[in-house]
Image 1: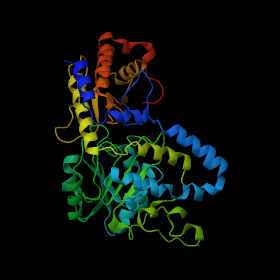
Image 2 (image 1 turned 90 degrees about the vertical axis):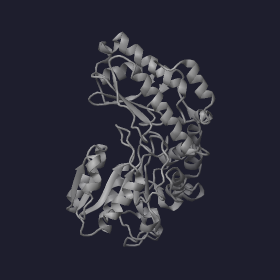
Image 3 (image 1 turned 60 degrees about the horizontal axis):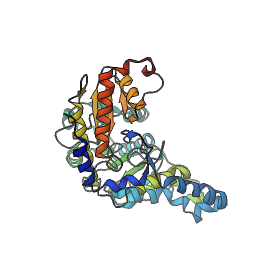
Image 4 (image 1 turned 180 degrees about the vertical axis):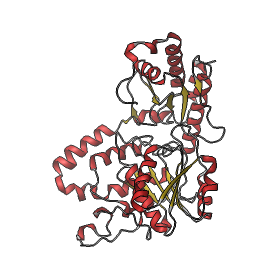
Length: 406
């Protein structure tokens, strides 16, 4: 049985995070359940970006590197992201992409564990993480080893330099126990690198307290920084003066404007910077991160969990689909329902104004960011799924696969 409108309305009325939705600009008539791939537009962002363009760039010109604080934006943004991921401010910087930050931090980890020749990953983690590690392994002359989740602890032998894990899995939504896995890796003499792309802004994360060595995360998903937003990188305090990534640049120099001939790394996570920061993108990410001001992340995780379970339970009653039951323990802020023609069904749903995404061959993924998703959206989405499935409209030619998978 689908949840009743009255039940969902009561949940919305009692939701302590309901006011956060006003921090975003969401199109009328749209149920947006893809914030786990691209967060919606923060309401304050257009004016902030316009001011950056017209005033800081237009009037301030090059003076704005100092007068508007452009030069410090990667560090200031990192400090703003830090409490979202449970880190001290100087341990985080906003820069580059997740892929580049993975390369930088993994190369630094290898250098910190000379003589060890293996990078260990979970076999089904997000492909780009493996692609980056394959390239680094070839360059560094080490081995990338990928094993099933259940075999990770046993695979942590004396040759593993780095354990790279995605905290919340992009399909299954399973969440690793960061404290346990970090301790297990350290006991084996390895370092840890965590990909927080589906965790930061959705789950409670405690990088410092849980013993993480390094971490990366995405700026355009739950942090709402806009398409292609800068990512962020974390380096635990104990590595501030010893970790040295293979990719270095002038913004990571201890004194970049001395223009010295030789590289000398800055202290702390600042050494992870490379080139000139993209200021317009940084200002957009700044507005996205500001949507978390005053937000209790434990309450956000709890709300997302409730949304996921309501949607999964309702979807399980619908014809022609199967539901990947959310993990019994902690899980991420999305759920998968499966249909043999998932791409057609999702295309038909999007035409009805319910936006999720799909992952081949048969997975439809629905995300439930706590700041923007109403309980009423669950009812609207389930009604649309039911209508598409029972009418068979997904078979229509207009829903035939074309273009990129979204």
